[in-house]
Picture 1 (spheres, rainbow, N blue to C red):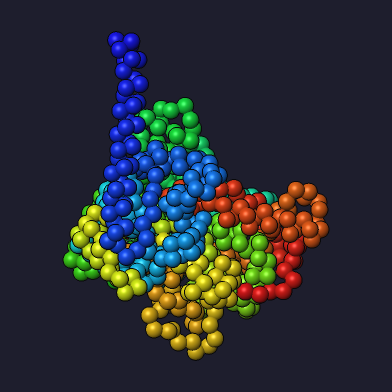
Picture 2 (picture 1 turned 90 degrees about the vertical axis):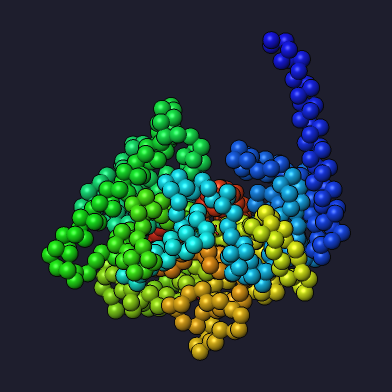
Length: 591
Ligand code: HEM
């Protein structure tokens, strides 16, 4: 039997190779046909059809692919793993002379779009170009939710959740961000750390506290109001708080999706045991939280029918009045959406905070300008007195400009997918482009951000001041306002800034993220600076060593891998230091 198998193996391999070659020939014949009829360029791709295993391996073989001679790697530069981040729109624009092009290969034809007007059109025609459901199916781990559904079901989920992001919720984010950063500063003192290790915890703490009423702190135990065990529990491999479970989702989503909880729990790896436990504990935790809110609401109603309700996101979801949407969420809908919201929030917020921290440490002049803004906001406050959402949040103009610029230069995703579910047409530079049903469209989130035609000749420079407009600024036609609470902020042309996506399926938590990000940094900069840990010889405080340290940090921040969102491949070491004790204080504060 073994002999027959061995003898048959070369034939099987030959058949497989012949079949694959035939598939390539068929794909490229289609590409040649398409080239004859389409007004836009066609690029041929040799990437095999994507599978979860390939996705997992691509970060490892990507550097090898890119080290091949140009002729061999050329196609990969268009459609590899982090291609959009690497070429930043220049390659298609300069080589193909087009911001819209086809990529044809074994996965059929895909439309790549980096033109802002076309991005705007595709993201606004949501019935014609919905999200491809298959791409998001893994996020159904705990049931359907606002990220995974489409059509009228999506409208229903979106309406209820949008109504749950109230102003009192934003106030909670504002307060919780101050508490979390103060607690982190206490915990971390002057020690050096890598942003990745700390920022994902910080974002889960903030989201758990202000979104789901689960107050965490950094001392190893929760504050009295939550009554659970927090970080200690996470470190023991038995996550028992929402924050620790959500952090596990962000770090280990793939094994969580692929393997059952019982298998993960029985593996000889404490990390995998923790992942298995997270998967099991999540539903139990959220059900208990929902019950607690229902009990509390009932008690409040009994005591005083008009009592003000709690305003965190989860309480709003549980107590959503049916008049908002013609219905309320079932318990399973709430669980599915708590997962979706936590996941969407954690992954992106943590990446934004990491990037923000490193950018500030590199650009000490910008850090100085943000500190001047925070000093002005806190001028009449006693040390430790909290900032106030209503009066102080609108004053955070420089901080908002810093956030928007960090998101422009370092968006969380290289590109996002849409799908034409029926035959469609778009217009680009006066040409009609036919898009057959079933075509995947990838709209680029880096290229428009780096386009000098939209942002000027210094489009690739990190310059937050480009967002600050003179008093009385009027938004030009066909532009979008990305922060409504700060006055006189740049409104870029539509489709030019898509870090939070665009159109109907844009980010539901945009304001939540903006309030959280700006307030965390305001709290840090009120008393401290963030500083790069010097490169090489730590005692060497020379200008040359500082320049080397900055250069290395700038290189590392450019080097990204794609794991759900884009992450910095090699982290950078930083530390918080009391203001006035910086090793390299800013020479001139300039945003
Ligand atoms: C800097 C932080 C953030 C960035 C850059 C960001 C970016 C994005 C982007 C690009 C999308 C579109 C995804 C797609 O089409 O597949 C999205 C969707 C979404 N985001 Fe965010 N996000 C951030 C923070 C948050 C936060 C804090 C929350 C919740 C508290 C949140 C909740 C959501 C939800 C629910 C969706 C799906 C909306 C829908 O499909 O209708 N995001 N976000």
